[in-house]
Length: 417
Image 1 (cartoon, rainbow, N blue to C red):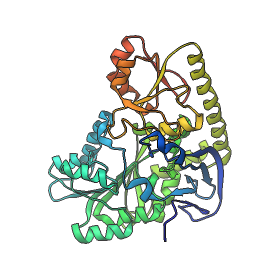
Image 2: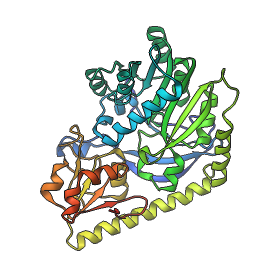
Image 3: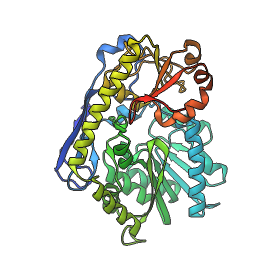
Image 4: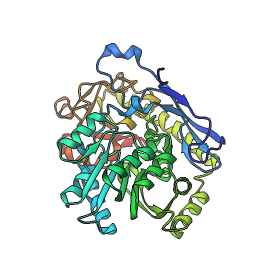
């Protein structure tokens, strides 16, 4: 029997309740990483609802429309190692984990959804045993080719039991920018707990809902991202997975993320006092309140109107436009705002796996980054705004010749020098 590509949940993936309230509708959208190879594929492109809900019981913000992970992740074109920003981030991240957990020879580190091994590589360079778990076979091969041992499997409790049997437990079990991708979130976290050695730590990074709301980062909503985490929602999830949070760090990556450090419930009875205080602060600022999220949706609609008006005005004045980056978030923005080749003829990207393809939905051709220098547009919309500073450094000649970068979020306009 053929597995359905698209299913729809009726209950919350954290608390199991059915009290889900929709507050944001971004329309029917293609899969954000489903780039097309030729114009012949345009007509057959599929779209799925991209609506966002709040569970008013446990405060988890989430999608209910679920795409089969075999479709999303087995052949993947996002790799972490193409960005200097991420390379530097992972180096500092690994150093923090090794320092704070006192890791050394004899310890083992696991990373779930380890991508091309960019993070684990730092542990290997320090002589620490490591193992990655990465379901995308093409990306797992990249990791193995660079010397990072990687198994190509989807992760959950059963996978974790097999890893412990075959390789032993881990002093650190890490997952970065992936928890949001998982439909069975509790099974994923229970698997991470299963991998822990006595005294070990689970360390997870995930984009922070508070930053998403404050900075209007609605473009980070796409079908791969099933959940959007507040500390309140994470505390409930971790508790149900028999984990306790002992520390939460705020980090700048991906527009503002949380780095969560947790231990097995056998090692502490409750979350740390600072975590409980953070949950109370979130409730006071409305991160569990549907009215606050409805106001957020109004701001999103206003952003779309402002961005379209800005771009159309520039084109009307004879300015030549392009875009920079072909990230998944950019495709949410392009499709929600209806920004096609009539306004933006092309985008550029550093990832060679995307160059030569067309963006999902709006079908912008993806060209190499050198096209900015050769074509010399007047204004370039930065779709990969989380790397804006890195992009500006790389494109000093474009800026020096009078070119200007535009940012879409939180307020559309010219990027400050």
